[in-house]
Amino acid sequence: MAVVRDNRDQNRFELDTEGGTAFANYRRTPSAVIITHTETPRALRGRGIASELVKGALELIRADGHRVIAGCGFVVDYLDKHPEYADLAG
Image (cartoon, rainbow, N blue to C red):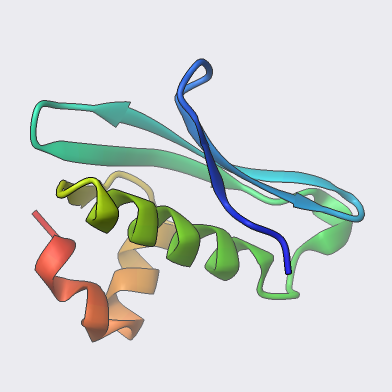
């Protein structure tokens, strides 16, 4: 199982897959992480990779004690479908 990592040098969460790297760009504030864009390699779309990426990113954000601000539609939809992360929305 691939692990989502925080690439702080590029301000993005990354998930390596066989077909490339899915990523979620972000901006940090003192108390929150604003996820501004998610992208999955075109050939891998529709396989749940972006959901796995966002879930891993949210777990990392939670572990750091921050909130998340959904700055892209995919993250908005993910949070709507996964109330277990409602405590992070801010």
